[in-house]
Image (cartoon, rainbow, N blue to C red; front, side, top):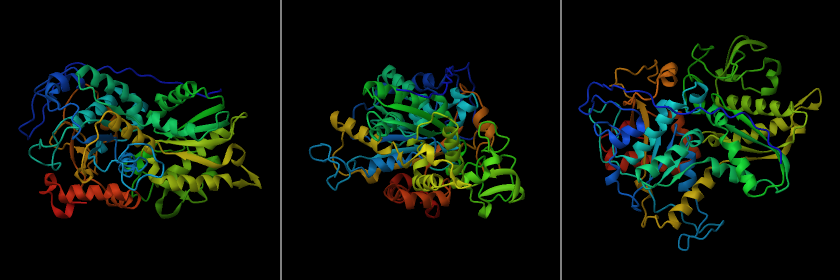
Length: 513
């Protein structure tokens, strides 16, 4: 067994000093001193984030399941859960044909997308994993707690959100950097709650695509943070050892810089209105050492240059200051970059499996397949460039279904499944910058500036963001259309939350999904 590994950059978490919190405008704003978010949650009764764990309704099967992601990509995980039909709902036995009934029809879910702070994959690249872990703990605290804001400008928070009975981390970077810490928190706090991540599920799915003695390459396409953690590589190594896998597998990683951000519309990576190269752009370019755009192989990327999907100066025949400005072009860039990496290895084994190690990527799984087919057939001067390092049919692995199965097994074996039909009680929240906090810094679009988002220090615990229900005010129309087309069942649950749930009854009808 041969593994081609990248170095693992491990950055330990240190929560810094004593912090002072002041936010104007709301009754609940207060001066808060603390040593870190975990201490604040457990011990600081004056903190917005305090949780009375001694009175938490532990092991209550009637509670919802909590799911969080750095943005909206985790909805692909939720959709796999709510549409799962691989078990007999009476006997709970595995049945690949299903029984015609959703396996989680009796459950309800609370989803949080930390859109204001996404993409999480950039924090390790900016040497700020301490802040990343703080965000992760605040996500967990939100799911465990009962507070939210009805709108970003609400004068007070509401406190009628339900607690949760289990947590799914629908984010690969958060799983890689936070799962062990969250599990330790659950143990030390006495909550003893199950925490399910996506990485183990993704590796399990990938290995099922391989023969026990296979000689091939496996690729992980993920955020820069997930790649830096080596979470998938280490987990694959562990699972192969445990299963006594006898194959010879090369493992490649491709850090999808900009892709998750583009899918969620982050302005540092994509702009629907731009017609020329932008100063704030942080995606692949000829001058970006983390994601270099190789102008010598520009034709190989196969970019779509129409409708400002690529931004540049000069002529199309000789472009300068080239910037990617469409999701499909980001995918093209990262697939070609991955294949170039494999092609340049003189002993490379053909690529057999790609794990989509970011929950945003499955929204575009069909385009991944289409692009791979084109690259398999791509020729220069009659010579196939990538075919020698590609299987004719490359398996694309989405960890979502395996994550759903793990959750189902946990709930049924622990007798934590709910009775009845409660799926339409599911709720959806997203984070937005807290404009009542005078310390935050926002750009013209109303989001955090890049330097503020990734540059502020951990340990200064305050309400940088507010968690509010999904509405047309905080989710762009084109992204809502994507939800409706690709994950219609989950989109229907979002609509139901906005229109039928008493919590959202006072939201303006024109703003509802």
